[in-house]
Image (cartoon, one colour):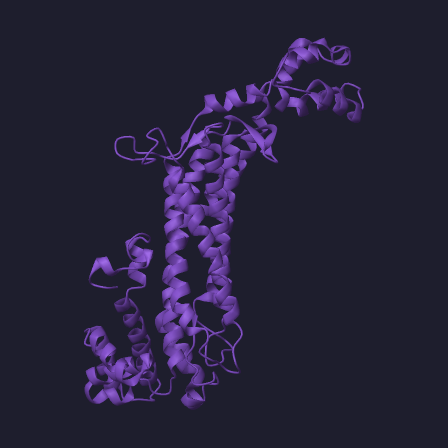
Length: 455
């Protein structure tokens, strides 16, 4: 990052990204991870009698004492034109006589891919926490509005009532599924390698398996059981496609907020700081769903980042370098933006303003038209063929928002009146009664999600 803020050109440098995630991708943090891998290698080799114990101690001390500076690594890289060799040389310089054993038997990708696994594991921990927080905000809304009637919409048209709490339970369940997917893929993602130039481990001789096991044990990682010179890129492609799935979930939920906040509907609204926030430079009355729109915008970019890692699965023989440059851009950007949009979406739902009265008015605006299903089923149960009951209700709900209500039309219809009394019709057309099933289902979903989120 440039020292002069006025020279910054990437919005991630000044507009997007939370500090905890930025810290993961700080150049100093990345250097520390690479050095940790080198130290783990030296310690393991010393334990196996492959290098002197005092050499491993010197290398470990140089790492732990912070003797390897980013400035020195950069200086060496300008000369060597090789990032890992610059790290190895700088560490060797800082390790005294023990420096001759730095990087013994390994290749660059052993260091970089294993350090990347550490980075991805830390990223996954943060993203999992994001999903947990978002899911809890959604389940809180589900509990609070378990029986709040809201018209359900299909094809953008009134369908039948649901409860707003059920809508939130559906959203929470999807978010938790994304968390489950992360838990399932993490063992495939958090793997390194210490297997040398083409993945066979030949440089470590008879101790190859023990070296790799020891290094990964020290770092808390799994090992790629069948690498080439690099860890299999299907693992990273799976992760970035998971990020794309999360982005799809996020945009779906943000789009629901944006639609339900429209002036014509106005059933919910994302939080708005009335004391200070401005919605428009011209239209002072505006209360725009800017957070949700921002989530939608960033989610589209995260999904776009899923493509390069799929291309990176294709390597020439045991490896090429065509994946390297784009991974340096794709992974930090995709992770940073996913965390950013999940944080914003949590703010939306944690502070969501819900208007039950407006929801009730919207159901009433249909003149009872949104309640046809319960009436149709009751008529069928009282002896009318379902197809005939459907046709009768289709006729009774022509122009439902004008003229008499559906209740009045139903009472006046001979076919309905022969089978149902006025009190029964009123009960069947009561949205609060209709959403009792949704409320009960919401309770079951939330109870299950609470158990899942406790893990």
